[in-house]
Length: 300
Image (tube, rainbow, N blue to C red; front, side):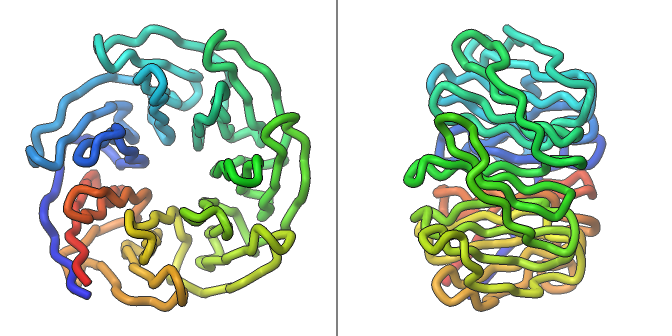
C-alpha cells in the first residue's frame, strides 16, 4: 500500500475538530475551536469558503440532504441551521448550555449528543425538541445510526455503548465496552458490525446480528482513538488518534496495513481528531489540533 500526501488545507485559527462531506464527491465542511465553518473543494486546494462564524467552538456538523441545510453544534449556545444555498443562518435554538459532541440526521429527526449526558431528539420539520434521553452521567461523545436494524448506538464517557430503538427511542441494550470514555461509534458499511474506540486506545468490533457479541479487541494506538472512517469500496478503514497518527486497516481481517505519521509521511504534529474518506480519487482527509487539514492518496 502506498500513501502520498496530496494537499494541506490551512485556514483555521485553532484546532480543527470535525470534517463532514458536503454530499458531493469532492467537497467537505470543517470547523473547530475558532468557530469558523469552512467549505473546501478537493479540486481547488486551499481555497476555502467561509460559510459561517459560529461564535463558539464547534465539535459537530451535520448536513441535511433533504433541504441542504447545515446543522452546526455551537458549543454552549445550541444549534444553528445554515441555509447553504443562500448562505445564511435561518434558525437557531439554544437547546443546551453544554457542549455538542455529535449530530446525526436520519428520517425526520436530528439526534444530538450533549456534554451533560443527554441525547436530544429534534424534529427536522418543526425544529422542536421531541425527546430528551438521559444516557449517561457524563458526556455522550458519538452517535451511529443503523437503518437495517432500525436502531442507533451511542458512546459515552461512562465507558458505555447504548443501543436504542429508532422508533420509540427506547433503550435496547447497554454494552460496558471500554476501560474509559468511548469517543467514536461507527457501523460498518454493511451494518453487520459496530466499531467502537475510546480513550483506552482500543478498537473494538461487535457483531450486530449476535446481540452485539465481541468480535475483536485490538490495542490499536498508543493513546485515545478519536474517529473511524471506512473506504468507499469497503475494503479498508482508518483510525485516528491523540498519538498524532492515522492507521489504515484491512476491513475483512482487521489487520494493520499502514501507519501515517509525521516521521513517515509528514503527518500531523498533534492529535488527529476526525477522518473523512471520499470517493474523489479515494482520498482520505484528516484534521488535527495542529490547525491543519491533510489530504492523503491511498493506493493499494
